[in-house]
Image (cartoon, rainbow, N blue to C red; front, side):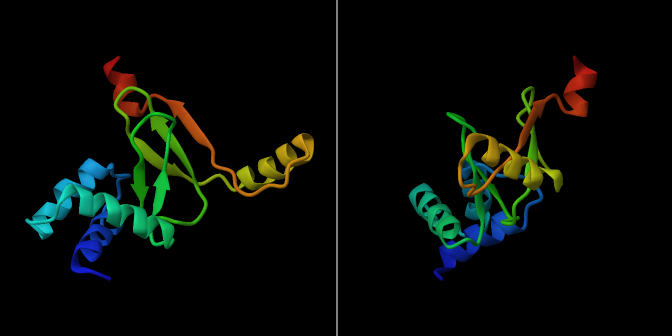
Length: 124
């Protein structure tokens, strides 16, 4: 693993947040001042493809990168964009029921609750 990839991995694994590529780039530059955006982007792609980090996508929005690669769900604030992990073991049973109803072979399921976080609720 190159020093640049290691820096990107350290940034993602060291964060409790779900970082965008821009967030990772800014933090990786603190570790490696000469790192380019293209290197960060390519490193994120490589680290995702090898299963060391997880990419989370939301339609046309920016991808986020997660240090937790095991299956889990998320809550997304439509006010500020905050993304938090939630643990709902029932989602696996929901996937099985949905697969039976649709007659699909299940591969994966991810649940994203979209709403307002406590900060955005209190400011609105």
